[in-house]
Image (cartoon, rainbow, N blue to C red; front, side, top):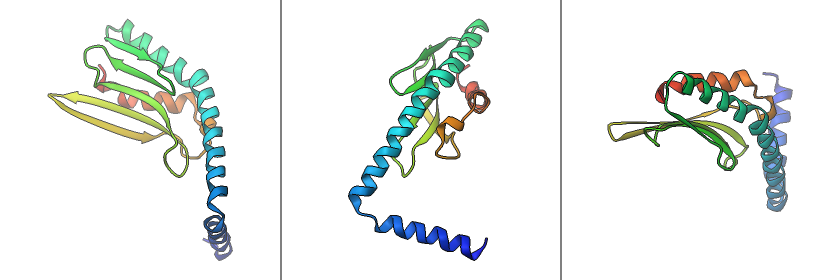
Length: 144
């Protein structure tokens, strides 16, 4: 990596670290607010319709699946066991907002939960239907 590129990134990190705390909090709130707006659009136009299609197909194939859209997420859950589900939700607790794919499976009293960050960048709107379907298909085995 070029020395000049490293220098610029280090200088930006130093400038960010030296900004007043109130400015950093305000910037973080603005980023999280924008991510919430983008995630709301993603839920309405991509995630909920995709989860609905997958749920309908699974039901048609004889699988006992429920679809839930609680505030801020969408979830496919087994009708037989509430601990078996796949969901997508927004996490704003870290340094940058993340779109999380979560899966939970229960076998013999043991519950295994996994989380996968679905957005490689801070741009939630860049996540496609194909990306989401790939996640769903990779985790569907635990539901059926």
